[in-house]
Image 1 (cartoon, rainbow, N blue to C red):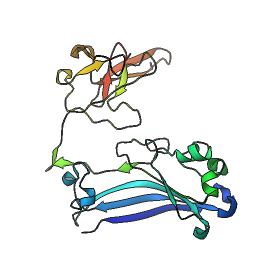
Image 2 (image 1 turned 60 degrees about the horizontal axis):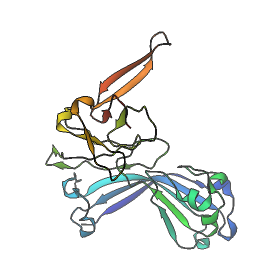
Image 3 (image 1 turned 180 degrees about the horizontal axis):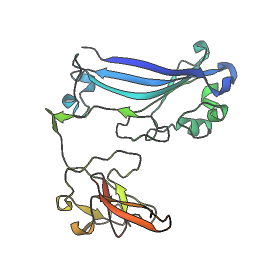
Length: 249
């Protein structure tokens, strides 16, 4: 059985307003969605965790998809025949900032987004795609849709460890993932007696356990009252957030 890959192109336009980059000339941008269907029995995919527990289509293939963007020489013969794949950072484009001193953008279009043109003058084809399946939408991040593994239709549960590192005081709520842009694994129970929360001052310091009655699986919501003046807050039970009344230190 062979794996499949399908490109769905939603946009194909000139990049950087048609400006030329040295001998390489003009670039074009190709944007869309790429859909994969892979054979879970293939040896190349054997190291993917729980792939054998993912749902399959009528061909027995596991389907998933991701956003993609390609910036390539409009005339391929003027390129250097090399592909630069930017893995990105949590769905964000980084290579144009690091190599081209360009303005940060997850949807580069303009001459300003090309920066000093370093990679383009040298004829590279740049490819950006999502690879992280737990990201949430926002800021133009490259997202990947992955199937949910199960044990013959039964949800797979297990111990999950998260670490919270805060740079300011007074914060009482955090997503379980530790990142606002990252999807959290929901807890199977809101009972804090079935979980543990510890804190430490340094990475190699001893952990101090916080009693289960001093924190909650919840989030702190706030807003103004009906009079538009008074401030109101509410502690809302949540299976994807942790609430520490005294604040994270």
